[in-house]
Length: 266
Image 1 (cartoon, rainbow, N blue to C red):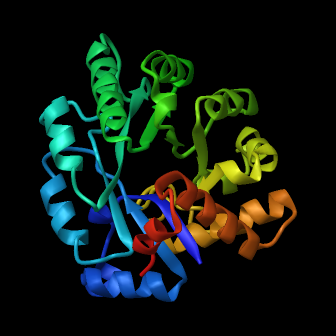
Image 2 (cartoon, rainbow, N blue to C red; image 1 turned 60 degrees about the horizontal axis):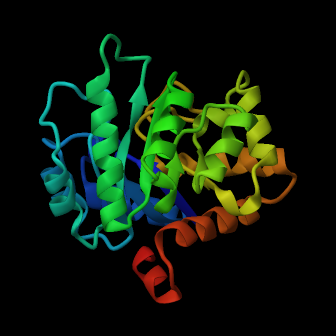
């Protein structure tokens, strides 16, 4: 059974499922997807996303605003705290820094990042971190703001082993997306081989970044199996072992007791 630790379910193309979200969820369950963490990226779409996934016990949510979003409502600390005070919300984010799509004076990104970290610390909920071409600055902010108190996930990991070590020291997990299956992703493959067994997760980031053999096409949580298969090959183990270990790691991060784990099962 697999857990997709990062997906955007309100943005996937439901056409293959007759535009029926329930049919999509049934198909994911049939493909042995035990749980999905649906990630928020803005305030405007959040209410509809919450309404969409609330009926499903095997889907959890994050709440936050992506660092690239600069034309929507800026979340205040109080608003994040209010929205995240919900049993469906298990994480804060995705948040972080992005120098690839944003440029110029990015103090607004830094301030937004700090606000999310503050909310996570108050609520004691892990952070979902997005960082692109801003790796070391992202770590500096996490370190300075005491994000190690709650930890979280460096999602869609694209850095090298030296970076991974620093993230691990800050109490963060490394999540591998379909990028790890790409031929030119040697640095990421190296991290996948070396990461401690108890500190990695798998994700799709669907509908984006589909793994080989679907690279360049719409992505779905069911494709998380291809990430697991590639990790199994890199680590010299079985797909079942990767599925079990990554699921256990997810539980360790988001559920402190066996009783809490029950809410992550369908």
